[in-house]
Image 1 (cartoon, rainbow, N blue to C red):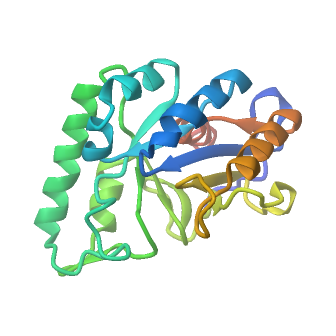
Image 2 (tube, rainbow, N blue to C red):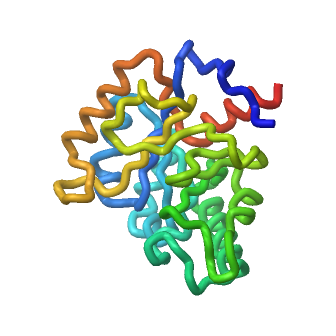
Image 3 (cartoon, rainbow, N blue to C red):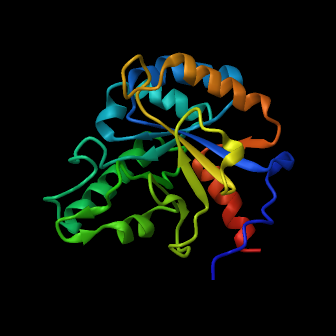
Length: 226
């Protein structure tokens, strides 16, 4: 049976939880996004692969020390449109553990509990690798499945994954994850103006609780286990 989430009580009387999720480890996430988040007193989740982290490790460590979450995106950048057509389950597993060990060593104050699937697929040459993700990570983010807690029924949708600019009042789940990639003027990028306007809008809404993925996940898990 799926848990009843209608009775979830968010901090400060909020009606919906919002997690800002930045993927890719782009330079503007370090030099533009993070300072703006700090000014607005918002904490977010940054999903990193080891190569992205190593490009500016000291800066990423500073971001983690400021209270932002560093999540695992180890498959990002080595997939083909979100697929792993030539990978075995063993290869996926080794990659997961290698990246987990890297994040734990580089960000010792954090526990990498959150995982981001790159695209719409979760299959490799031997089939689905979803069980590997659920075994290792307490919380996972998938474009179609939404935000999930480990060991919960597959039909349970704790959260929706949306793009910047969506009207959160129309979200039917108690948790919305705003997935943000590259920021810039390009066709498939989020413009800096839209991004900043959206962040400032979030800070004006008293009925939204803004927190990293793992923090919201722990709150939901505690509610379910009551």
